[in-house]
Structures are given as C-alpha cells and as structure tokens.
Length: 313
Image (cartoon, rainbow, N blue to C red; front, side, top):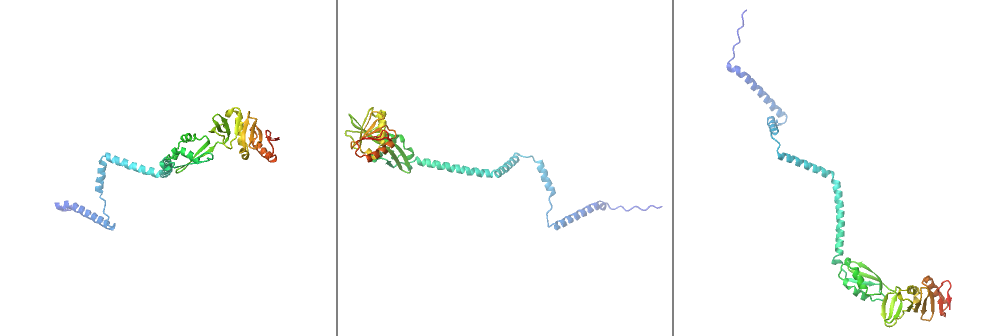
C-alpha cells in the first residue's frame, strides 16, 4: 500500500500564535460576560479581591502596638461603665433622693440653730408675771443685763443671782418667746406672820424664810409666838395651820401661838380664841370652824382639835 503524504507543516508564526489568539479570544469573551453581568446587576462594581487580600495580608503581618492595646482596653472599660450605669440606675436614683432629704434636714437644723444664736433673736423685752406684793418693774430692772443677749444664750445662773435680791420670790420660770421677748413667771412666798425681835418685826413664810424686817408690825400680819423659833416642829405645824385657815378668817388673825406641834392656837381680832391642835385634818377643821362661827356668833372659844367633836365656849 501506499502511505498517504504527510500534512503540510504550518508556518512557525501561525503555529505559535494560535494558542495565544485563542487565549485572547477566551479572555475577551470572559470580559464581555463580566460586563454583561455588571449591566444586569445594576452597575455594581466588582470587589477588588486582590487589594483586599493584600490588605488582610498586611494586617496579619503588622504587629499589634501598645496604642492598639490601650484603645481596646479603653473601649472595654467604657462599655463596662455603661453596663454598670444601666444596671445601677434605680439604686443611684434612690441614693440621690435620700441624700437630698438628709441634706435638706441638715440645712434646716443648721440654719435654725445659727439663727437662734444670732442677734436676730436677741432679748429686747423682759416681762415679769405673777408679782402681787413685789414691784414687777423692779424685778425687770434687775434683769436688764439680759437685754441684747440671744434667747438661746440667756444664762439661768445670772437670772437666779439677780432674783436672789427678792426674798419674796419662792420659785420662777423662764419662757422664751421669739423673736425678742423673755417672760419671767414668779411665785411669791406667802407670809404667815411676823416674829418680834430686837431688830423689829421680821416677816416670815411657812418655811421660816425671812422676807422683810420693819420697825413696826405690818398691818394684816399676825404675831407668831412659837417656842423653838423658825427651826422647830412647832413652827412648821403653825405655818401649815395658818395657810389652811379660810381667807375671810385669815384677814382677822392677830396672833398665833404654839409650844408643840399639837397645840397651835389662833387669836382673832374679835377676841375669839380658836384651839386648832395639830395640822392634821386642817381642811376639815377649816370647814367645821366656819359652820360653828355661823351658828355661834357670840362664842369666845372654839376648840376644833377633834373636828368630829367641836367644843364651843
């Protein structure tokens, strides 16, 4: 058989360029396909994969700096504080309310205290109440040194020292009436009679306190003739009896005598003698004496030592 002739050898340029032309045509085809896809997708620009890959590679290669660590820690602290504020909001509000209330109370107390000790509440007027025998103006003058003193700083010891000059004052009480008034309420001693001595007639109360001494016997005050003086039990009993006598008879007393605590005797200006005895049952004895005088106006002696068995003479 006869062998077929060999195919003609293509030119060198054509043989080498054919694959290249095919590659170029394929590349152009793919480019057209990509352009077509872009147009169909509304003109979205494709991602730069090569640039992103380079950036990620650079980030992976670049070492973490101190500044990056500081920024991350700061962001974490900021987030943590935000979470703490969110979870403690109610407690913070409650604490603010309590602190505001306590602050208001402290401010009120402090302001009131400061004002009380300031000249805004200084004494400008002193009023004395309860004085009958005493001259109230004289007592007010004795306390004049307290004028200008803040009410909260009025010294009770100084007031007491000033009132000691008035023996008739038995007790007293101070009343501050803001903003400028100071009231002094006094209770006077009740005289029970006078004791005669070389110095004259000394007016005393039921406790034996000397109230005043005069050369003449004061009008309306009975003469006390008590064995043992003002420190004896006889004087104590006589003082209680005099204070128990009804007011209408008290004005008629001219003398009181006693040797013991159980034999107090009263003498009236009419000449009537009343044997009182001890100070026990004095209210009942006063009532019985009043009734007996009404039923026996001419009696010269009435013995009420036993109020249940009155003896009239």
